[in-house]
Image 1 (cartoon, helix red, strand yellow):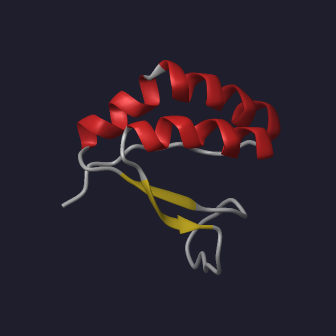
Image 2: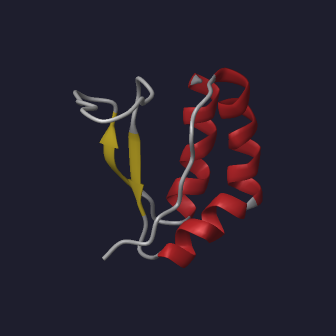
Image 3: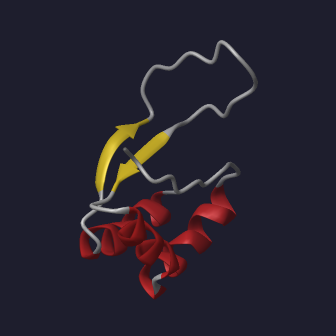
Length: 78
Protein backbone atom coordinates (compact mmCIF):
# COMPACT_ATOMS: atom_id res chain seq x y z
CA UNK A 1 0.00 0.00 0.00
CA UNK A 2 2.97 2.29 0.60
CA UNK A 3 3.75 2.09 -3.13
CA UNK A 4 0.19 3.22 -3.89
CA UNK A 5 0.50 6.24 -1.60
CA UNK A 6 3.77 7.25 -3.23
CA UNK A 7 2.42 6.73 -6.76
CA UNK A 8 -0.94 8.45 -6.24
CA UNK A 9 0.84 11.58 -5.02
CA UNK A 10 1.87 12.28 -8.62
CA UNK A 11 -1.70 12.17 -9.96
CA UNK A 12 -3.19 13.94 -6.96
CA UNK A 13 -0.71 16.81 -7.23
CA UNK A 14 -1.34 17.15 -10.97
CA UNK A 15 -5.14 17.32 -10.51
CA UNK A 16 -5.21 19.42 -7.33
CA UNK A 17 -6.54 16.76 -4.97
CA UNK A 18 -6.79 17.45 -1.24
CA UNK A 19 -7.25 14.83 1.46
CA UNK A 20 -10.30 15.67 3.58
CA UNK A 21 -10.25 12.37 5.50
CA UNK A 22 -7.50 9.78 5.88
CA UNK A 23 -8.47 6.95 8.23
CA UNK A 24 -9.43 8.30 11.66
CA UNK A 25 -12.22 7.33 13.99
CA UNK A 26 -15.57 6.33 12.53
CA UNK A 27 -18.87 4.76 13.46
CA UNK A 28 -21.04 2.68 11.16
CA UNK A 29 -24.47 2.58 12.81
CA UNK A 30 -26.19 1.15 9.73
CA UNK A 31 -24.65 -1.54 7.57
CA UNK A 32 -21.23 -3.04 7.01
CA UNK A 33 -18.22 -0.92 6.13
CA UNK A 34 -14.49 -1.24 5.63
CA UNK A 35 -11.92 -0.48 8.30
CA UNK A 36 -10.21 2.46 6.56
CA UNK A 37 -11.88 5.46 4.95
CA UNK A 38 -10.36 8.10 2.70
CA UNK A 39 -12.09 11.15 1.25
CA UNK A 40 -10.26 13.09 -1.45
CA UNK A 41 -11.59 16.45 -2.63
CA UNK A 42 -11.18 17.88 -6.12
CA UNK A 43 -12.06 21.26 -7.61
CA UNK A 44 -14.86 19.59 -9.56
CA UNK A 45 -16.46 16.28 -10.41
CA UNK A 46 -14.88 16.46 -13.87
CA UNK A 47 -11.40 16.95 -12.35
CA UNK A 48 -11.92 13.86 -10.19
CA UNK A 49 -12.98 11.82 -13.23
CA UNK A 50 -9.99 13.15 -15.20
CA UNK A 51 -7.65 12.20 -12.38
CA UNK A 52 -9.06 8.71 -12.02
CA UNK A 53 -8.69 7.97 -15.73
CA UNK A 54 -5.26 9.58 -16.04
CA UNK A 55 -2.22 7.43 -16.85
CA UNK A 56 -0.66 8.62 -13.58
CA UNK A 57 -3.54 7.40 -11.43
CA UNK A 58 -4.07 4.19 -13.39
CA UNK A 59 -0.41 3.37 -12.71
CA UNK A 60 -0.96 4.03 -8.98
CA UNK A 61 -4.22 2.09 -8.82
CA UNK A 62 -2.42 -1.15 -9.69
CA UNK A 63 -0.66 -0.93 -6.32
CA UNK A 64 -3.95 -0.23 -4.49
CA UNK A 65 -5.70 -3.17 -6.11
CA UNK A 66 -2.81 -5.49 -5.29
CA UNK A 67 -2.65 -4.41 -1.64
CA UNK A 68 -6.27 -3.84 -0.60
CA UNK A 69 -9.93 -4.42 -1.25
CA UNK A 70 -12.70 -1.88 -1.02
CA UNK A 71 -14.97 0.52 -2.81
CA UNK A 72 -13.94 3.53 -4.87
CA UNK A 73 -16.70 6.04 -5.55
CA UNK A 74 -16.61 9.45 -7.23
CA UNK A 75 -19.46 11.70 -6.06
CA UNK A 76 -20.33 15.21 -7.20
CA UNK A 77 -20.58 17.53 -4.20
CA UNK A 78 -23.03 20.31 -3.42
